[in-house]
Image (tube, rainbow, N blue to C red; front, side, top):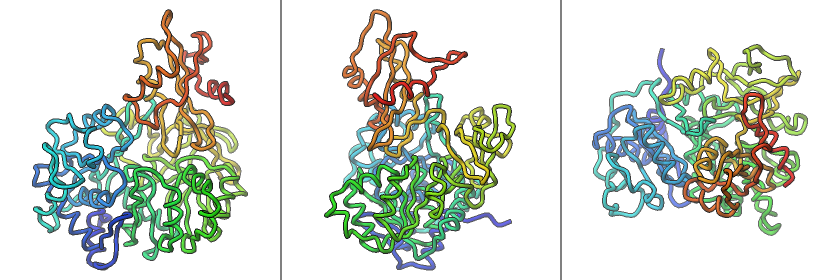
Amino acid sequence: MTAPLTAGETLATQARLFPDRIGARDLERAITFLEWNDRACRLANALLELGLAAGDRVAVLAHNRLEWAEIYVAAAKAGLVAVPINFRLVAAEIAYILRDCAAAAIIVEDRLADRVASLADTHRILLGPDPADAGFHSYEALLAAASPGEPGPPVAADAPWCLIYTSGTTGRPKGAIRCHRDMAMLALVTAVEFGLSRADHALLVMPMCHANSLYFFNAFLALGAPVTIFSRAGFDPALCLAILGAGAITFTSLVPTHYAMMLDLPDRVRVGAGAARVRGLVISSAPAHAPLKRAIMAMFPACGLYEMYGSTEAGWVTILRPDEQFDRLGTVGREIAGSAPVRILDEAGVEVPDGSPGELHSRAPYAFAGYWNLPDKTAEAFRGDWLSVGDIALRDADGFVRLIDRKKNTIISGGENIYPAEVEAVLATHPAIADVAVIGLPDPRWGERVTAVVVARAGASVSEAALLDWARPLLAGHKRPRGVQFLAADEMPRNASGKILHRALRERFASS
């Protein structure tokens, strides 16, 4: 049976069919499908000429910019594995990922180059003005010297394409393996579910190092539809609203915080911004409440509003469609096209009755291939073909799914997943801390704010300000606690096995 096309083969096809059509752009530059394919081939060949071979990992550390489109496709063409790294991470966090995946090369934006300055035995490629700094290859110089021909041999559909690091309860990030076959399937499902066509145009605002933007990017590439990458280091709500109102964009996916920031703009900016062509808006990565949804629909009256639930590992799992937004408020919808009915299981693996909470499992042909070098964690994630990322949910009699707890106490702040165990592992190294738990508390702007609950060592003391200052160089900004609560040792709530009850702490401090 013929395998689905890789992203590299797909772009080559679009370049042949629509050579002069704009395929990708950011807010400064644009390239046609033919130019995009030429540059992706050059980058693929340049990486191979540096000595990389199929299966080697190429890390990418950059803010949103046009080159992401070239790098992802170049990796697919060369059989290399792209490893997107969150630009918010600090040097120590980046170093761990690079060691764990044994990256053979890293492509890094000039503004972020200091975070990889100490790397050795890794090809460093600089995105930025030429000439490149000492110890770095110049991205543009490599492309200029490389062949524009398609690299070979063909890449197998089941070969890894991307390694996306997603933190877990162990306190260390885990690399989720995404292969060409499952990504091609996910792209087709995305196009079907949202009714996308070649006439659509996506605005990719979420970081290109996130699964969300990667998955939508790949779907639009499969269709031969253009994408615009929101090339700003941070979110500019006025600029985003202006782009949506300019007439070219038909589709975007944003987190609730993005919508809230646009709604907070002065009336003179919001009123009349217009979004006549935008017909698809997605809320993802964090829950959205009824007042926010109503305000979004008032600001974009011609749009269909979707809410999705999924994960890096599973892809899309459920979707709440435009006509269900208020009749099924509080749910994340029902299964997306291509997915088997979700299963809600108890600890023994037995399906629970509708209305009862249990662990959500999904089954689809686009699930991930496993965690990098973590066979035990991969085995834990699956029950046969059924995948779980640890979310507790219940299903009503009509099949609508409601999430009860997220990824074993995951904090979602501004659309970023923050895993308490990872932050706790850092804070626990402070000499004055005997015990620590990290929780998310309600925040009107960011959804949740990171809060540390600390038990000091006997005879030791540490202030909130001192602890926050100490953590600054050790944790990315979105992971750093915004506040600290102090408890006596006997006040830290625990279950019978001695594990800290994060939910009890959230309930205790939610109004603080």
